[in-house]
Length: 361
Figure 1: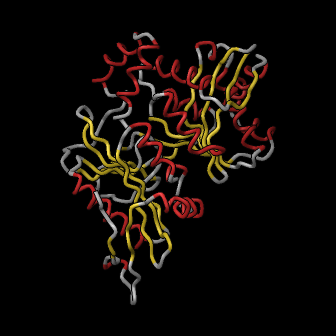
Figure 2: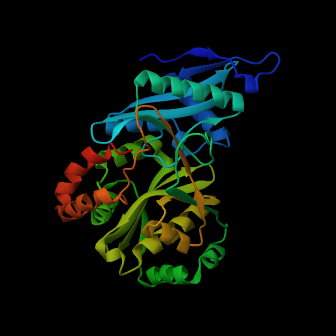
Figure 3: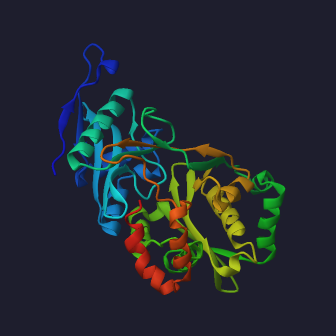
């Protein structure tokens, strides 16, 4: 489908004398460099606005993507990465961006944002989706239904390890020291193999479907030095592992997990402390613990580190749908399914899981 390129004049709210004309286009391969240049410079963007997500989502999940940008006088003024998911079980959506905690419109001016917003709504209409979803830090459409389930945890960190250690509340600091005393070791992995073993075992215990190993390989290949795996071992055994993203002066531990032994030796606690230390050496100054659902163990774990929850605004323009989607594991109707999933052999869950999770977004 050739959606765009069309000229968009600012709405009356943004109209000024000699108002510039904004043109909304679909990102092509030749646009990747200038897209990412804008993303790195714009203060409203995140790692999940990077152009590489188009390749990852299409190759890993087979979904169609629509990466829109708006330009004026030959310069990009805003971006909006979108992906379409069509599922018999979970509906038909257009979202910014599935599998990503942040997304939505990132623009240098209200007029540029408005042009992208109108283009996305027009695309949602053409695709006849159930709903259009934006994943923003701040509300953009107060009139749209919103999901308040998710929060994020972000915090500035010091350039000094001792200061960072002392900034961790006492009980959690004791868990980090327990991992240190257990003589755990940390290293950077080039392969996803040890990471995937720890991650898949962890999510299986939670009763949720696993992403495919192919997905994680694509993340490593696409984002190269900005995607790093830190693995924790004890006497050569894998204890825990985390895949993190680096963006500007931030580190985002995004996917992680531990083996059954991790709890006994505080493997996950030690892992995040080691990641913080590694990040400080790289000059990183913001630790983004990422999204968690309120009322979960992950939420409590991050609060115990001294991080304060910050609300995320997931907004939905309902089109064919009558209500916002509710596919989270806390939904009572999924409890039986979770219990059954936990009883599946891990090897079976790892084969079936990717076919389910690719439609959840």
